[in-house]
Image 1 (cartoon, rainbow, N blue to C red):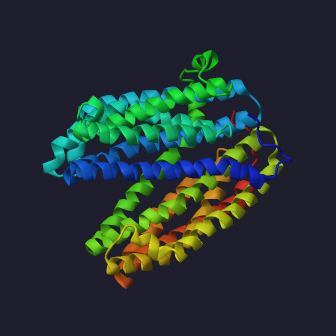
Image 2 (cartoon, helix red, strand yellow; image 1 turned 90 degrees about the horizontal axis):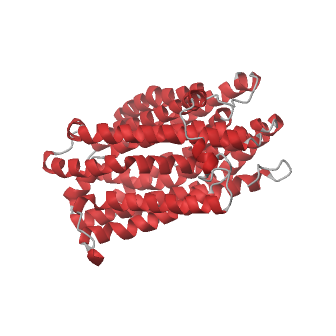
Image 3 (cartoon, rainbow, N blue to C red; image 1 turned 180 degrees about the horizontal axis):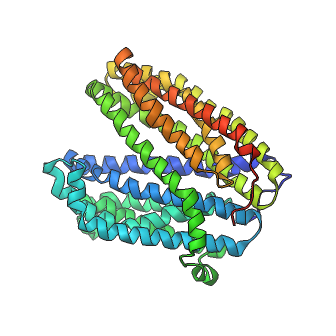
Length: 452
């Protein structure tokens, strides 16, 4: 596996990196959708409600680990760009071991306080016992889930996005095949009811990690789980300090953005069940446009980190320009498709004509702004490559909490439901202006140095 060549066209490097990542996002979204269908159709609405109650808890830990992965990915990218394979293993080993510790702590605390946590989240009384039973299983399989998520992120630091995609395909196929089999007790398997999806997910994760280990060892991959890799599994405080400095703000940003979505949903809910259904349908379509934009930003960050590690700072500006251009083509193309096919796409989720018309109007109001969202994310990704993360994260949080939410409330009062959706472009434009100003006026004038 080679570092990106300075002579290779950047757009090719981007697309080779991007394609597996975008497919991975699609596969994860599809897997979650199908699992929800299994549970809802085979076990009933109450079972689906019980499983849904765990999402905020699981998301908190996944957000934390994604933050760690983002920090470690930048450090690994710099070490890989400098061709320091031993440092790549040291960073990966320290980060993975911290991920295991976080997972085990979550498993112990989560299983002990599961009932209290679910009650605090307002889980309905009629599904509380089922939710607690499901939570106990989920918390004990959480360490394997977090390690899998974290390790696939670390692979991106050495420009490997294909292995995570293939591993995710293994995990998804095993999980989706086992969930209904465990619900119904097919092939002599035990009937596990609401816990079926959790155990199927564990089997999928373990299968994927075993397959991934085999693939990496066979290919002599820099992150193959060999003797040298296991020797690097230690909590190196110097490395972890740098990982946390870059990664924790990213994790906090994810959690804040998730909480703000709950506030927006509460606003939408006030307009009735039709509005809530429209929100759900529009969000499904928006996710399939937003994920590629975020993937371009991650690619820019990793390629930038590798350029810094290789001492090729002159490549930073072309990496940024190429990322912005690909955002125009890829995200922009998806947006155009979204507008052209909006009636048909929303019809996949909504059967009532009036609800579909409402959702189409709301989608048309904000879909274009995802191009702006992509621009600001890519600029933030380039700055993250050098370890500059706190200010870009603060800008994003301020624009959501200080601009989007107040604007949503005010515009809701002025224009009704459509006003809530007008707040998204307002926030994204604010992010783009502030990120660009910080990039131009501050970041470009800083001395960029390797972090490891």
